[in-house]
Length: 139
Image (cartoon, rainbow, N blue to C red; front, side):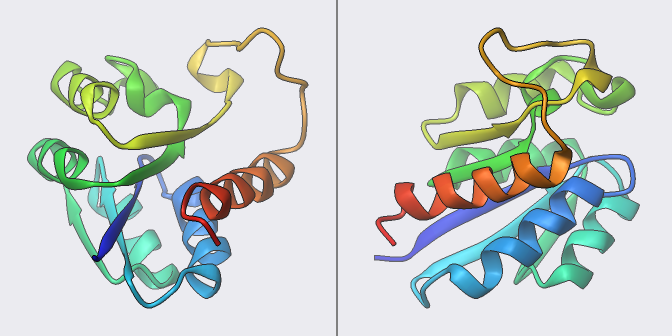
């Protein structure tokens, strides 16, 4: 059975592209690594980093979130108007309502703090997210 890992991002795609680079070499052949960006720059960065396929915009996020087994991205992807307004309410609802397991990267730039999460460098959060994805996929 093929599993779909979806990485979401906006703005310049920095978080998403780094997640793609961390996960791609770790995923088995039965995992499809997809990306969806809120804009073309984010999608292009994730594709350049090695995602198998990618799409851009509200419908791409909504469509792929419903089909994913695992979703990774910045915490703003579950917030209406997150990522400086790039995440529409429909995108946020689709991601938060998806049956997929979600691994979210904390970011104070969205104005959301998660109690109990230690403040760390972004790179540490990204490595932890990759470890959690591996565990979730049974690797």
